[in-house]
Amino acid sequence: MKLYHYTTYKNVLKIMYQGIKTTDVDRADGTLDDVAWLSTNSKSHLQKWSASTDCLLTEQEHHDYLKAFGSMPPKGAMWPNKREIRFTLIIPDNDPKLIRWTDYAGQYVDPRYAKELARSGGPKQYLEWYLYQGHVSPDFIKDVTWYDTAISKFRDENPQFNKNAHAA
Image (cartoon, rainbow, N blue to C red):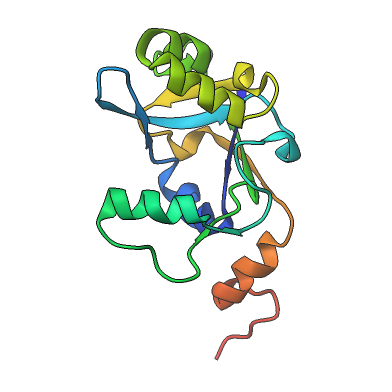
């Protein structure tokens, strides 16, 4: 099955070498499940769950951060643009770790949380979401697409990859 994973340019090298590490999804029983979020949608501009540019935390997000971590986030803290990079993956349809979001949510997730998450993704986008339960091997990666200014930002922070760099 062809699936896509979107992320910020800061994660490119790590994912290329280590694969996609997991994030948490809140289950209705209060536990967290380690999953990698994937989509069947190849169009980055339709991934409404993420802003298309780096953006400052809102006042409410500052307070949420304080509540979660006991201190305020750094001044100027921003959400990264998680639509800068698209990884194309091929994962076998019968892989037992691969599950459609709607099936997972219906079984494990509080309906209010699932509804809010679906709303954040845009109209019917949640129907294209999949979860991979556990670490996604770099062997599944078949292509990497760079969007916006991701290449120039990456080169600015990683001069060793600048095409104009010269050996000393």
